Image 1 (cartoon, rainbow, N blue to C red):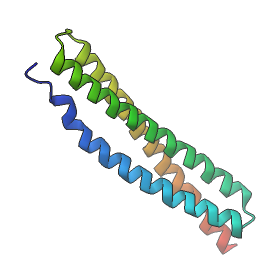
Image 2 (cartoon, one colour; image 1 turned 45 degrees about the vertical axis):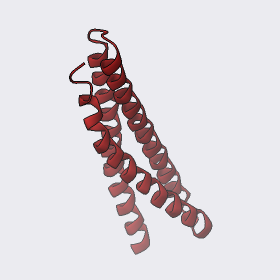
Image 3 (tube, rainbow, N blue to C red; image 1 turned 90 degrees about the vertical axis):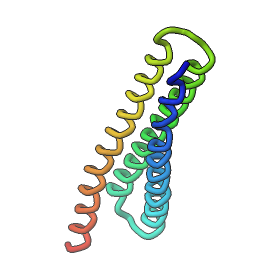
Image 4 (cartoon, helix red, strand yellow; image 1 turned 120 degrees about the horizontal axis):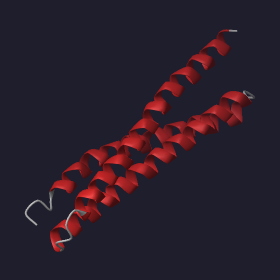
Length: 123
C-alpha cells in the first residue's frame, strides 16, 4: 500500500504522447482532406489513410495503457491482492511499448510517403 502512486507517475508521459499523437492525427486528417479535394493521387492518399489508421491504433494502445496504470494504482492502494497490481502495471507498459512501436513505424512510413510526394512533384 505504500507504493500505490508509482504506476500513476508514468501517466503524464503517456499523456504527452497522446497529445502529440492527436496533433499528428489532426494534421494528417487535414492533409488527406486537401489531397482528396485537390489531387488525383489516389495511391498516396490511400497510403496516408493507412497512416491515419496506424496513428489511431497507437492512440488506442496509449489509452489502454493509461487505464491499466490507473487501475493498477487503485488496486494497489485499496486492496492487498499480491502481485495483481504489478502484473497490471507490466501489462500497461507492454501496451505503451506497442503504441510507441506503432509511432516508430508511422515515422518511417511518413518519411517515405513524403519523399514519394516530392518526387512526383518534380516529375
